[in-house]
Amino acid sequence: MTIMELERNIERYGVDFARWPSALAEQALDLIRVSEDAQDIYSRETAFDEAFLGGRGDAADLAARIADTLLDPLAAPPVPTVAGRRPPR
Amino acid sequence: MRRALKVDQHAFDPPWNLSGLPDESLYEMFRAGSSMALKALIDRHTGMLRRMARNIVGDEHEADDVVQDVFVAIWKRKDAWTPSEAKFSTWIYRVGINKAIDHRRRRKASPEAPDVVARAIDARQDIGQDQGAQLAGLQDQQLSARLRLAVARLPEAQKTALQLFYFEDQDVDQIATTMDASEQAVRSLLKRGRQALREQMRKEKKISPHDHHGTRTEY
Image (cartoon, rainbow over all chains, first blue to last red; front, side, top):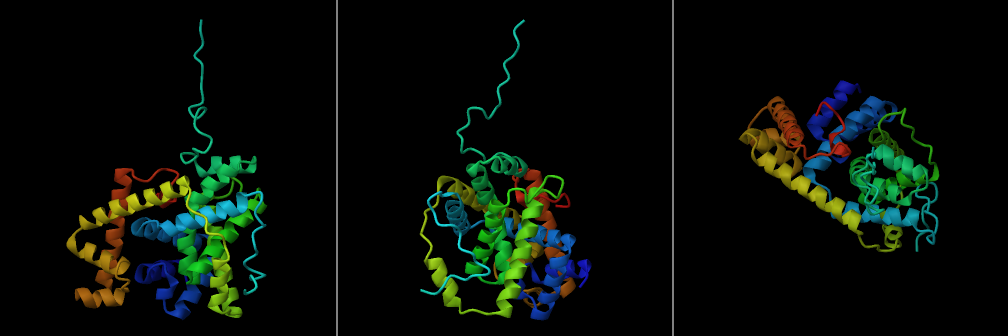
């Protein structure tokens, strides 16, 4: 996929990849992964969505949790979320 | 001759009133050891990062994980960004996008039961919003309200297309059917509608220079 095709597909499907045909989504993500221009286009279009649809209280909640997790000297270190999933209860 | 006493305009600001500072200043303060500066950056960029992550990984809880990973990475490595690179906002969104894509690809490679993630989230302490986060949320809501008013003032066809796309989750094909228009016409309406809204946002100067919503001049 080229940059121009990415822009056209974003115009068509939006920035939510759940709304894209899956094969096209993967092509777009391949491009975005390797191209800073594509990343910037994607973040610009997402910024518009974010402004248009409005911030949500749950983002503020998440921000507060992250800040408290990182900045509380008594808190446990952040649990890795990539390599080691939290064990199920 | 008496010299005027120069006083930093922020000299007597409460120590937590950092919301007016640009990202670059906040990052430098964070590097120098200011936890409040990091908190201000988290408050400012979490919404956008979360939206991007959710759009890529397709799951709200995993999007939250991605956003946390971004800020943990920043917290751990204070020299991760330098001013000679792109703008801080550009850089952090690039980081967020890449982490979200990596997360999506790893999940596809080794899918896990959704309830594992849900239980992990449930295990977190429920921490209430602080004043800064509430203010950020309120400002976002106000911006959204202004944008909705701006949409209402658009030409009818553009307004309909944008509303169907953003509020009804219709894709271009569906909108074309709904509006009895061609796909090309619908794409054109969406594009012109977005351009009109961006122009409106710029004219009203409702977006601060530090707000990520207005980082690109082609807006």
